[in-house]
Amino acid sequence: MPIRSRVVAKAVSSSEGRGRLESPPYDPAADVARLMPGDGPIEVTTVDGCGVRGGDVAIKIDVEGGELEVLHGAKETIDAARACAVVIEAHPLVAARTGRDPVECLQFLESIRPFSFLVAETGARISTSAPIPRDGQAEVWNVIGESI
Image (cartoon, rainbow, N blue to C red; front, side, top):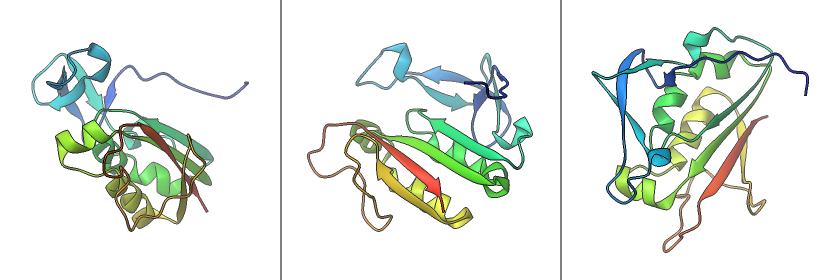
């Protein structure tokens, strides 16, 4: 698709700085590592720091528990967008490890502007008044938020 894009070879979070990747104890694979702020070889920025304002914005976030931090660092971008779509991963093991339900990300998005949410895998609409991973759920869901 002919869309304008730019690659930023940095990690994203709620603030700028440096960090390192750390894998959770339940899965030492590199593709499930999460960003640990502080000293480290990885340069960290915010989505807002990339300078995208206005127009249509799509953000896909899969950062193993740091989704809310990324959203905090994208607040101005999301607020200024003409239309906005945000996709986050709702992973039961990550929610258990962090003690943070992915619904907190959806609630934060709604604090910026109105959104509607659905589960990509099922098409089910999601409310921000209940936890996302259900008791005993093992499936990982991708939750799509679309500004309304």
